[in-house]
Image 1 (cartoon, rainbow, N blue to C red):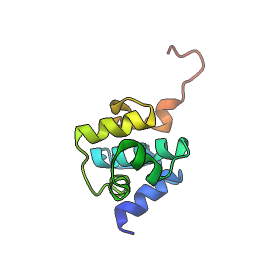
Image 2 (cartoon, rainbow, N blue to C red):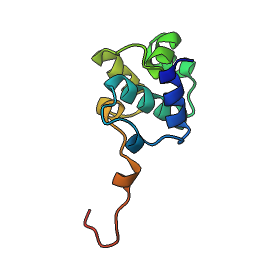
Image 3 (tube, helix red, strand yellow):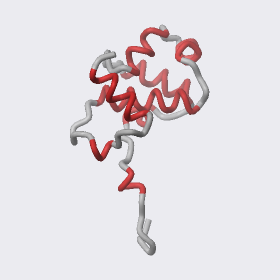
Length: 107
């Protein structure tokens, strides 16, 4: 497990928040985090997602570890298989401070 894998693992466990990360998070890392969170939220194994998206399981694993940069067609197939838009896989997750609103604040 490399240093990037350890950081990703800590983010996924909630030990590190994005607001604590350097301001520039690579698009591969954003895809990796969103892909893993959405896959796990839907109760899918890497193998099941790979089957649904017609992608090799080892490629899913590599994407979740930020090893490869996925092509737009792959991102689209993954998104469809997860029931989301491709943009959802590439959108930086909000920080916890952005989620909180003070009382009386307009939405």
